[in-house]
Image 1: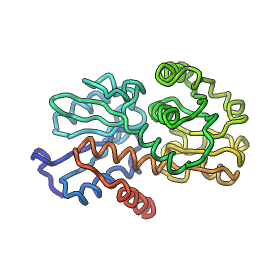
Image 2: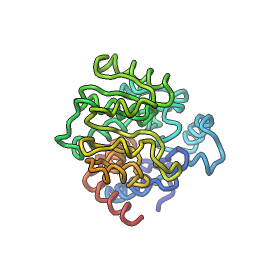
Image 3: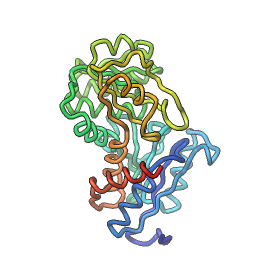
Image 4: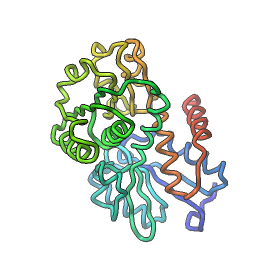
Length: 292
């Protein structure tokens, strides 16, 4: 693979997060770049492997900028912490208070959020025809904020946001309520999941629980039933403990894979200015996931 990433038209991209070894993003981006004839290298910058905490994300950002990176994807646990180290935010990232894509351009580091558009596109395909009158979202972090924005944007009638950090869920509800209408979104305690799911049409899980580095499920299987659809944000593993329990309960399910692809499509476009082929990237993803 070419290594002259200081040359015009070449791209060096990084992924910043904790426990990101299983991520398919590097291979997904590099395969599409190869198809488009682009010089493109995608590196993992794993906080755990580097031995640094989330509070050092600013240092990683500065180092990447000096090294000549085109940009970075940002994931758990620094989607919100990275904002303090950016020069500007896209309108959507500012509303969400979360960033998953950073572009270095014109001497500035600009934050974007492609998770919201990624989930919206995934849900419109994978949950086509599903009822959205009452939806419960578990998790108000960076991914949860994007999902909340997406759900309201595609027509969720009433969204209840639950999080262990009550202040965080309240801040998200205030921000999105001002944008979409305060009668469409409410916050609740994480301990109120059973009550929130009573009569709900769907549940979206957006916490780290279920990831390879955080196994398990945050949702008691007894709360799942055939009248509930269940969507997952985690995609490594693709079949989380929650999705397995939901399938067993007869729920319609949506894994996190399509969201991962569609957010990558939008990030790739920002990084390169080229138009990626979303269908081809879906095929790349399926092949990579099957090989794993």
